[in-house]
Length: 209
Image (cartoon, rainbow, N blue to C red; front, side):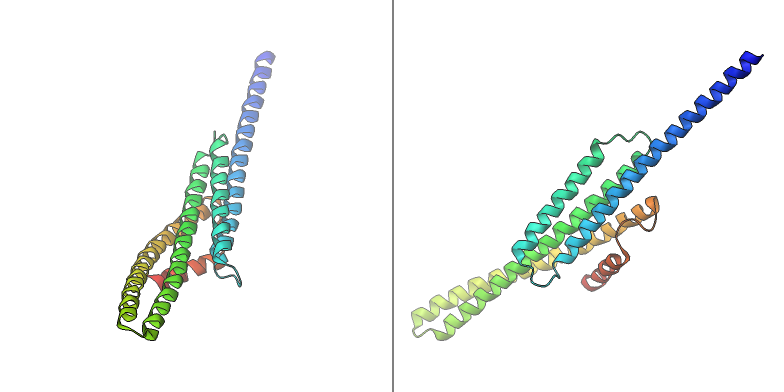
C-alpha cells in the first residue's frame, strides 16, 4: 500500500513538472513573439515617419527604407527558424503583422519615388516651356513645342501613376491596421504600433480615401 502511494505521489510530481515545463516553454514562445512585434513596430514607425524629417534627401530615404525592409525580413527568418511547439499561432500573427509593415513601407517608397519623378518632370516641363517662349525662329519653336508636348505627356502619366499608387497605399494601410489589431488582441494593447502612429495612419486613410 505504501509503495502504491509513493508511486502515485511520484506520478503526480512528474505530471506537475511536465505541465510546469510546458507552461514555461509556451510563455517563452509568447515572450519572443511579443519582442519581435515591438522591434518590428519601432522600425516600421521610424521609416513611415522618415519622409517628414527635415533635410532628408530622397537618396537617404530610399536607402533607409531598403535597410528597414531587410531588417524586417531578418525578423521573419528568426521567427521561422525558431521552434514553435506550443504557440505557433503567436508566430503566425507576428509574421502577418511584419508582412503588412513591409507592404506599407514599400508603398511609401513607391509614392516617394513617383514624387521625385514628378518633381523632375515638372522641372523638364518648365524648362521646355521657357525654351519655347525664348525661341527666335519657327524651327526652334517647333522643336521646343515637340519637347514640351513630350515632357507634358510624361508628367501626366506620372500623375496618373501617383493616383493609382496612393489608392493602393490606402488599402495597404487598412491591412496594416487590421494586422495591428490582431497583434493587440493576441499580445495586449501595449504591443504593436503606437497610438500616435495609429492616429497618423487613420488620418492618412481619411485624407487619401
